[in-house]
View 1 (cartoon, helix red, strand yellow):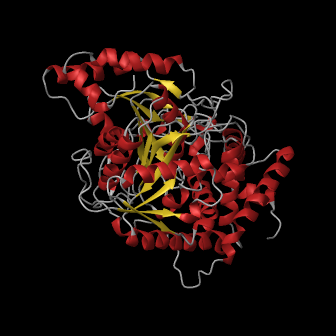
View 2 (view 1 turned 180 degrees about the horizontal axis):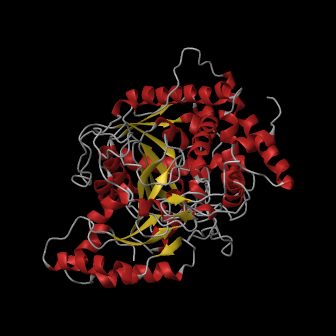
View 3 (view 1 turned 90 degrees about the vertical axis):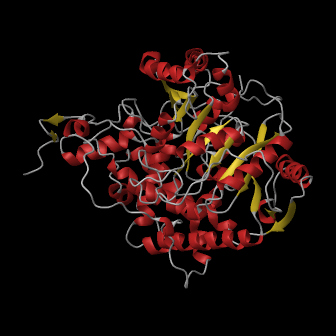
Length: 480
Length: 93
């Protein structure tokens, strides 16, 4: 069932399948819910007019770019009239009155939503274990211990698992420090985090506003280009949305890159990594060298500070963003005698452990006496990290790194927050710099689990980044 | 690093931690703050803080009035409402 968007559209055009049949196939799989990848599967009657409209457009010979394509949507995007929970108890009854900018573009292009994908609570997590609705199970199994349920990664874990299990063709995720790329890697699919400012954040439940970015999780690089074409637009409702001219990411995606390409591999990223991970880099290097692409060693000076910077800035922004959950305007209220009691009770009972922890970190680093030492210092180091990337991207066209330091691990295995945070060591620096990154499957570990590599490009250079990723994908393609 | 006053921090965050969890969060916070303490050794004396990585692309719309949400829309998710208001316990003494 792992057909690409262009293959599915071809079948729809040739009437080998109808939009309704296609929808039912994916929806049934989503409803079976074996991996808990959906918080909500939308009822067929709520989608029936979209299905019929889409079929009519195919019948009339003028389908839209994503017509009839069944998509999953991370439960962090506000969807009009459809419950949107951020996988949190505090939003478990929230029904938005408006559609997020990104999901509206996908609807405008004819896609049909299967449902809302499970994720870490407020997108805070790297394993999808912090969800109020329970963990998501990775569809992949370790061949040496088949019984173990593995994490899909996070925070867009439900999105990644849903695409990998085939209950949606693609899913919209969000990435703050690796939340698209890391689960894509652990589930053997493609995950793209565009440049910060590419896709509007309007209508996405906010986590860390200077880092949050929407992007697709897909079966192949070409599908990522399909989705990016739809969602990458300027929006006045997000003041950080860039108003530069967008390109068509689909045209020429399979053509080789025009100029001679040089790719940097950060040697400091590869210290102390396992053979499994080193193999991914070696394979990719070998596969692309055939195409005349040159590889050089580069070295960052700021890598050791990236996680610290992130775990000050992201919780600081989160503690501020999550101040809106007060039990008064929306979400779950816990009663109290006074207004203050309502705030305290609603928030204390509404947030899970990890979200509470991050709010507390944020409140601490922003509090009087610590603001300069932690928050302001982290913002300064962030500039050094950005400068470090710019220095390297002056020497090379792209950067190649592992996406994750390890394969998918067992549910319940990582209890210590810091060891969990270290999962994002290769994705966080790119997020801090605001650069685009894409993870593509690059091979299997000794345990038969998927691993990925990440390509990082320059600001708003998604077009060449996708071309490079498509070429690497073709060379590296592995069959399950 | 000075000691973390978990009661003060949770008060700032409008959270009322159950007493049996205070130590759990306090220790967790201590570990994380110790872990991020390595930033202090970075010389940033000549560096400006970075607020927005795409600072050059910020776009602001024209200040034109437009109609978006209705009062009913805004109140539709309220846990409690009274006419056109959010309802909360009496605040004035």
